[in-house]
Length: 426
Image (tube, rainbow, N blue to C red):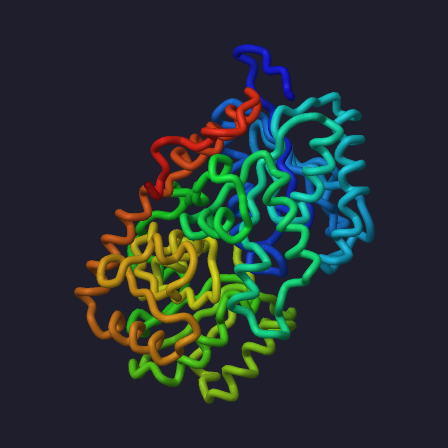
């Protein structure tokens, strides 16, 4: 167990093996988890504990060490090919990745008090590091194979390997962080996790960045027609995000001037969709909706508040979300959300209060809810006001304080009573 010197700040090793917190959002394997790791590391450092985030280099242009913020380093390690790899290939690299982390820490002369792993591959790495460093590790799955496989089609199912590894890690980890109460219950009831080591702590939202902005000014800045109705989608182009449900809903929406803006995925130099986004475009064209959809590709996070604020509503038709960062970001800007009634979305969105929840994979219900908001300006304004108010509870100051409490308890040797009494979802 770690020996803590009184008044000495903890030092945290965060593990994000398969994706860098600095990856371009909306691309492959780059979404809410990347934002979470980046912002949590920054907030923990602001509380006085330095953080090193270890990731595998998949971009040859990234230097070995990137200084993300005061007290936060992202350390890119060369393990395997410098390229994106399938998850099964990455699993075989967990042991050499752990060795490289140990070597990097020795080279830098740093010692850690707690490991915080993100996603199952990082959990495997943390398990190996714990054995070497003799310090505890906390694990946040973000999603589990079991949860995803309940809602994905046969062609998109997660591997048996992932399921088996996660079943082991549930018992191996010294603490587990769940993003919502349902996820906590699933870890305990279905996977047999020890109740006292599972804390419900949702991700946070940068309320300094995401706040209400003037609708007309945002439209003007983006060059959008003030008379158009805009439905915005933001996210990775991945089956779990349910964009097919939104496309199927498009021709069912009665509003004649509605445009659909899609942020995420890749564009070629001419601005045309490529890869999975091109498949979405083909589906849109088959629906006869080609003139109604704009493809913006991946966008920097700094631009998202303007896009949210310029939109009439944000659609989050996901098959599963452990938290639903896009939904809460939109809420923080005062933009109502229409989302699937799944996962963490059910704990942030309330019908007729700050948005609408619709049944999973139901284009008709999605279209009906979108129409309801587009047709009623007063309702949309009311829901947007309430959304901005409700988003305040997800401030990073509250979230980071709760995560730090877990770190401190673990570093002091505790394996029970790890959670704060004033949990955000309590």
